[in-house]
Length: 353
Image 1: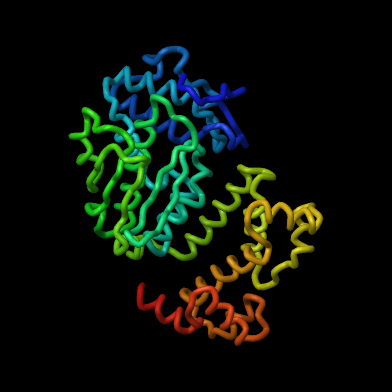
Image 2: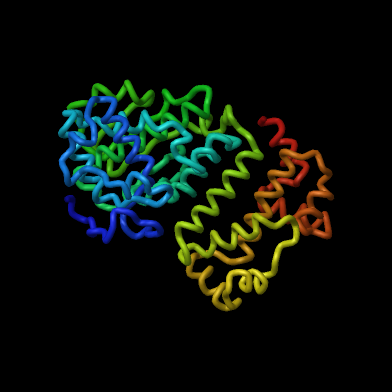
């Protein structure tokens, strides 16, 4: 077993996000891939064979340690160290559950990647995704949360193919201009990369990073569906909260606010709903680096933008629906959020459809 792993009490981790874990669908994809190559479960070593608890885990995460061992046995059984590329290619967008549904329904490619970054923890704690903007362009970093040991290249190759396949599903063109900076020496199977990746790869980088052209990010998703996106986003919020009981109070507050329709609760009422005192609510949010007012602002901004873009109601009606009695106050606040008046933002958003 690779260094850096804690021996889990169980292979199933229903609510643990401290140890490396991932959704069982990826285990099933790996087993299906092995089966297609003629390697059944019975051909694997006994200590690498998944038990019924792992195969029937539902949405409960599986600790990564036994999967790490299975990966090594799978590579040995097939003689294919590039299995991570194949696994990534076998995972279509809907393999990723609510995260995949939200990404596919996003309005733009950028929003889809931001959604993945926010909610990837629903599917795995082995890596996290971070989108960084700088003057030289936008980069998606795939950051290892733990020491992945000998399964490192397998996992990261799978992740980058998953990302590119998602981008190919969302956009009409542009994936051939992706650039992958990979944190390992050029492997013997590098000649296979063009089968799985349209973008170019270089090796020996400090970490796994995908360079993304801004015009690709600004493309509307071919499968954009505002109502489906909002539904999937709320499901992601629910799952994120469910998976991190007591550890993500900000998500709990945000989920409650998203369920409101202009009748937003005060901080005191929110604390009561969450079985906290107002002082405890403020303290926990402060430790998370955010405030109740900032969360309320974020939700109102998101809902205002959605209604301006997808409904024909007058600005005054939208302001009222969001809890603003004074339309001019809503307009000033919206300008602070976006730099534009509600009417100007709506016109710009519709021109970009």
